[in-house]
Amino acid sequence: MKKNDGSMIEIRQAQQGDIPELRRVSIETQVDTFAVHNTPEVMEAFLRESYSIEKFEEEFKENDAIYYIAWDGSRLAGFVRLRVTDEVNHLLDKQALELQRLYVTRDFRGKKVGANLMQYSIDYARERNFAWLWLGVWEGNIKAQEFYKKWGFQKFSEHIFWMGPDPQNDWLLKLKL
Image 1 (tube, helix red, strand yellow):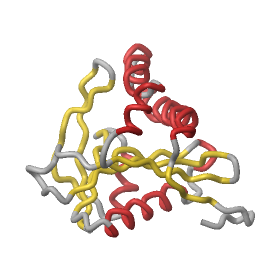
Image 2 (image 1 turned 120 degrees about the horizontal axis):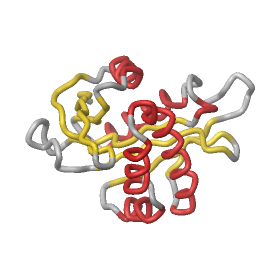
Image 3 (image 1 turned 60 degrees about the vertical axis):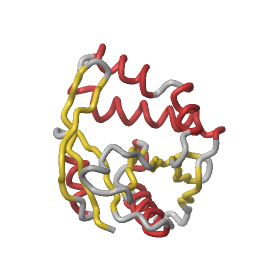
Image 4 (image 1 turned 180 degrees about the horizontal axis):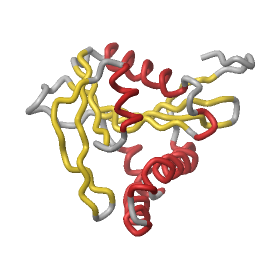
């Protein structure tokens, strides 16, 4: 992806050595997006449970899961995590790929990094013959919902997402590939 200043955004598969940066961006994104809607205790519990170094190391060992990162020179601009899970098989089918996370750093929001990561995810899913790309988005995250709607995602269900000890409602969105 070429930017206005002539520099390039490179998308590549994440490596284990990228975990500290992936963790930093995950925490930054969660705090920026959700801290205003949650108590400090809920945020702290969620970040501790979901974004520890150990949790990321476990995720790198997961079968059928992969991270792709967008780099601008030496800076991480954003990332996406894709995985195969059976969570929605009863609603879609076994040919569904979850877009579990798509995060963009503060400095790169509004600069098409998210769009490029989304297109990369769609291409990845199509190349591997998935029928569906699906994701969960918090019912109150209107900005993200609008982004996904522009890509053609449609709501097909809901589930509970645990933000630390707090159950929150996520909309499940799907895209036919």
